[in-house]
Image 1 (cartoon, rainbow, N blue to C red):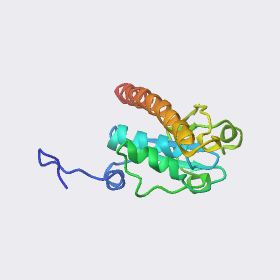
Image 2: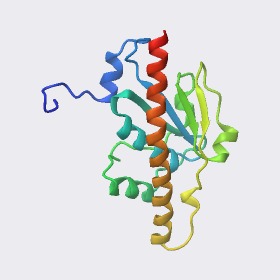
Image 3: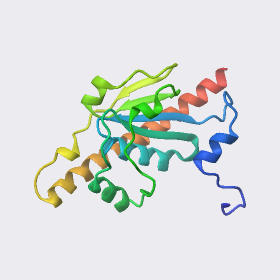
Image 4: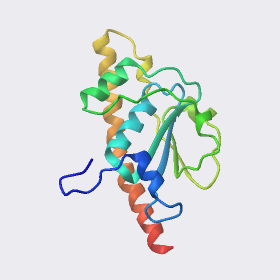
Length: 173
């Protein structure tokens, strides 16, 4: 597939294979962690993947994974974001991997998140748990939408800062 100028539009997976380790073109690797990997961390993963494009390799996982919540999928789809390959994953799938950023998005995961090897930045972004919302479906959906909006705002800021830090490190090495 090509863009309007005839340039190849590679998927994130194929781009990773084309980028030599240690090059200035290496993607920024980010892992979002939540307890169940069913709402907040999934939202963050999808949002950063959409915002950061090929500059980021983004994953999410849970300390006690369950299933992606239907209201999570609904909010993402309302925003026009791809949900086709989403699944709840365990942090165990990522143990031993190097990340530039490990971001917990709930307080419980912050307490139980395993340590990942290498040098990376650990961040905590505490958001209310939309899965714990009570009430009618519309009331619960409103909570999912509110948390999605909060995460989206933070993702925009985070992506810009992470890219700037990567450029600064590349310029000084």
